[in-house]
Length: 244
Length: 183
Image (cartoon, rainbow over all chains, first blue to last red; front, side, top):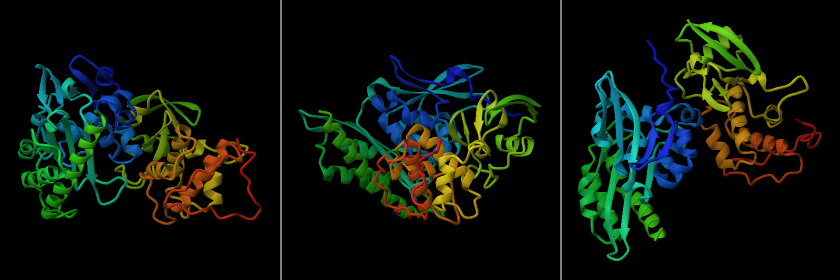
């Protein structure tokens, strides 16, 4: 049996709420790219959505669908993980809220029970407007799966000239999309220098657990993590300092 | 069976089809509209691209039931009795197609782009066509043709936007410019 949920109105729409930015699971990637709310409060999610598939895919494919695949190379996962998003799941036993990191269980496996639906994603108020960047490395520009993708979100304290709450998320280099907590801890409170960001990239590469497959070797993917994490941090940092 | 009411190329159809019928199968097998092609059948090649409520989609990935109540445009609905659409004319003039298998999809992707963005850059055209794979002509002539059609649709004499890196200048054709007189 096929049950089409694409017109379930309460799973659509993007709204600014007291909790943060609520994005219905049925919002398409094209809608994310165009949404004024996303572009203002969580532009990194629009950056990631823009790299998914081609126009045709983005017009039909949804944020909830992308997350619920549990595929480690998904593009919306790292952007949302860097923003510490939460997801709402509903089923016959009621509704529950999970950190997105707990939603991903393994390759193509999520915390969804067979009778549950992913209903929405909430980017928490504390992360709205947090300077961030998403980078993806594929084998070509159009319709490419990520060999590695990285999102970084940082705040920079202008008085102490220090990183505050740096967040780094990695895709396609572990059984699920993951954070790089050791690299984050290294940066916390440190001055935003290019040396510190390069070292954080190297640490993130040691936290990745990539596999070798027909697209790339594990060593190549680790090297990509190091470079992309450094560049994503630098781009997020430049945005943080540009905003001050 | 799913009961469907779908507008295709301006004409409303009331149909019933098994629930697993894709929009592509409905168009090709139930309505005899074979312009949209069955290529990869997994949403990679774009040969089945049609517009649903103005948006380009892969008809192989959409169930017919999901198009219930919506308006579908296929390549058969693009030309009028008076002539080809400017995009079709430009694809012909610039030799943007060889075998033509990808053509209906590529032209409809380009139409969705130009409807939303009448003066796209080369990069925007490449992004709009990224989901339409061509295995014979290549993409350069398609990009040139979309630029030319955009110019024709904006009205003759409009400034041509700078070409993107992979776009080649259009080759003048015998008979001079014929951009005017198109709807």
